[in-house]
Image (cartoon, rainbow, N blue to C red):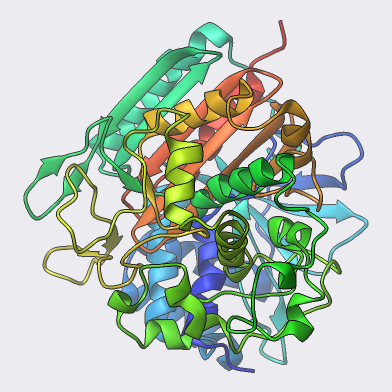
Length: 497
C-alpha cells in the first residue's frame, strides 16, 4: 500500500530526527544478541547497492538521490512517498553526519535476514548503520533503515577520563560550529555543577541574529516529559488513577466511548494505547491558525481508530499524549497550559519555557531551518510546517538552562515523589517509561526524551548512575540528536571510579 506523505514524514522523523529510545551503547552488552563485523565490501550486486547508497548520501545532491532510487531501488520504495521527501531524508542525514564511510558488514547470532552495513560518520566519528533487503530478479533495494550503531566488534573500545570530557567537547563543538554543522546550544553538567556550555549558529538567518545560551528552541516531543510529570502529580493527589479508563476524562466529542472505555491513562503514558497521530492529512491540509487550545485539535482526533488492542504493544502516539492534556484539564478544571506553567515551569524556575504562539513577536526565539541545497539561499524555514502553538504532545519552547533546571527539580523531588519517579523511569515497554525514554548501557541508566520535526531537534539525557545531565537544542534538522548521541558515547567511555 502506498504510504501517505504524512506517514512517510513520520517514518523519516523516526529515523533521522529522534533518539527517543534509540540511544546506542558504545559496545555490546551482556545478554544482547551477539554480532561480528567483517570489514570487507561484499562482491556482486550487493556490494554495488551498498556503494550506491553511500555515494548518494555523500553527494548531498537531489539528483544523486533520484538516481539511486531509479537505478537501485524497487518501484514500491520509490512510490512510498513524494520524491521530495526521499531527497530531504538523505540531505538531512548528510547534514547530521558530514558524510559517511564504509566500515563493515555486521552479522548476528541468531542470523538476521537483512544486510546490515556499519558506517563511520565524518563529523562526530560516531558509528552509524543502514540495513536493507534485496528483492526480485534484479535484486533491487526494497527500503532503507538508517540508525545509530554500536561499536564494531573489530575495533578497540574507546576510553576517556572524566578530566578529558570537557576538552574533548571543546574540540568537537569547535569543529561542528566552524562547519555550520550545528546551530543551537549545549549544556553538560555533573550533579549540580555545569561543566560545559556552548551556543553557535543563528537564531535568525534572515537578520543574522546569533544563538545565545538563553535562546528559546522548539522542543518537539520533549514536552511529553512535562505532560507525564503533570499526570503523575495528579496521581499522587488521588485526582487521577493510572488505571482509569480515559472515558472518565475524555468525552465523546473526542472519541467514541467504545474506544475510551478500553484505553487507560497508563496506556497513554506508555504509548501502548493503539492510537496514532493527529499529524494527519487534515492537519497538513488546513491552516495552522486553527490549532491553539487543546480542544482545537478535536477535529483531527475524532475519526481515529485503534491500530491494535490497548496494551498489546508499543506504538508511539502523539494523539495519546494530546489526550493526556485533556485528562489534566478534566481532572483539575484548569486550562492545560496554565496547569503546566503553575505546577511544572514555575516550581522548577523555568522562566524561558512555554508553548509560545508563533504569530506573536516572542523575544529571543529561534526559527527552525531545513537544508535546501537547490535553493539560492540553501535553507528554508519551518514556519509554515510546524504547529502555531505547541501542546501536551510537543511543540513548546525552552532553553538548555531551563531543561537542566527541570532535570534538577525532578531528581530533587521538587516536582514529584521518589516513588513516582521510579514508576516514570521504569521501562514499561522495552525502552519507554511514563513519558520518558529509558536506556541501559555502558553509561548506566539514562532517562530523558528527544524531539524532532522539520527544522528542529532537541534532546535531554539524565545519567542517573553517573550523575551527568546533557541538554542539546538545535534549530537545524536532526541538529541535536547526533551530538547528544556522541556525548552519550563519550560519557559511556568514562571508567567508573
